Amino acid sequence: GQNIDQPTEMTATEGAIVQINCTYQTSGFNGLFWYQQHAGEAPTFLSYNVLDGLEEKGRFSSFLSRSKGYSYLLLKELQMKDSASYLCAPYYNQGGKLIFGQGTELSVKP
Amino acid sequence: DTGVSQDPRHKITKRGQNVTFRCDPISEHNRLYWYRQTLGQGPEFLTYFQNEAQLEKSRLLSDRFSAERPKGSFSTLEIQRTEQGDSAMYLCASSLARQEAFFGQGTRLTVV
Image (cartoon, rainbow over all chains, first blue to last red; front, side, top):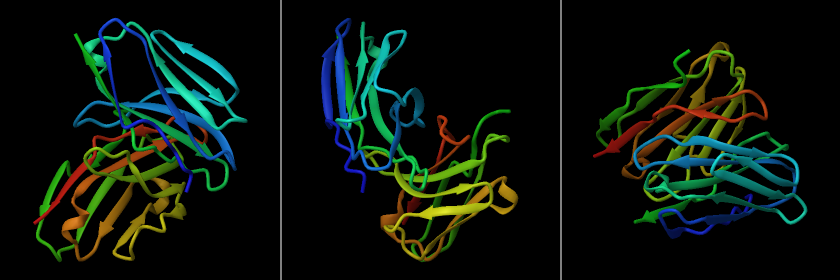
């Protein structure tokens, strides 16, 4: 397997910043996606990192370290609507398939 | 294009029956994925296609599961002799190679 590891649950306060970490197997690694999934809905694309470094997109940023097999998703100025599951999904050259972690359930409280 | 569509949205079936689900991907996408998701878990990879070729099938998938993508367009996922453990949300996604996958709304299967 690809040994994807991310925390099961996190809680944060409205207006705060939260960082969701993900580690994965590096062998055959190509890039990494982050998806958001609200309860009862399909996952939606947030970001894609191929190169090392930080990619910023509005309130959401994603970081990748290829050598360490590590990524994080940073959410700023949290809003109640950010309460959702956040899925780390590394993409591997061998087979070219997209594999998802178990997801991190984020609860944003007032 | 209206995105990835799946049919039906809900299916209730008796144990032992066969079921078939359909996925219509975004038209220009050459990759199509099937996943299964249960409550509190991330999507579990089942299989994927590049055009009409099935490139990989999960080793966790029993022989009761089969998928096709004739002519590289829509895809079907069939489950034979359903079991209660097959109850889950079945998600389909499509993409261009090495680009983000877009998901359909899923088919929720309940085996009674």
